[in-house]
Length: 200
Image (cartoon, rainbow, N blue to C red; front, top):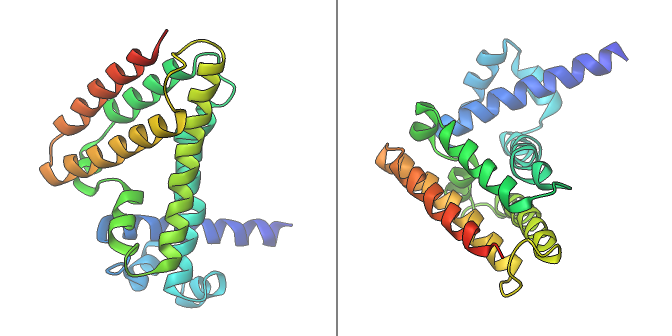
């Protein structure tokens, strides 16, 4: 049992170091040598868990980035009594808690989508699943609010979710390029008005 726990910890350590490298430099420029150095492990230990750099990159997407979206944007909306209010809170928190490094590096999911979707089908499919999960979780929350009579009935929750997720991803890219928080603050204000406009 202890060996399995140690192995799981080692694997997680490698994934987190890889995530940091990919977020800072992009997948193609990420260095396995630097990932190994950051963990204090050997390359043999890395290859024990991940047979190639691409396998490691896929695992970062499937595990860390998928977990990030699930914990930040999907789970908090499940079974909450006021999905629209909670969604506004999540958007406000994500933007108000942005750090300088968030502006410098941008959204890790969006960065990878822009870098890898046109050059590697495996990355594209995995990133697409994350965006789909985010949109579906948002749409389900808006649908519950509509069914409960908390919002108007004359809108499409799936389209609204696409607009919300696309706005958040896009404003983060604009903020990264501008190295300014203002695009994110403007996005927060506009999304708040949009969500308020759905209320009955």
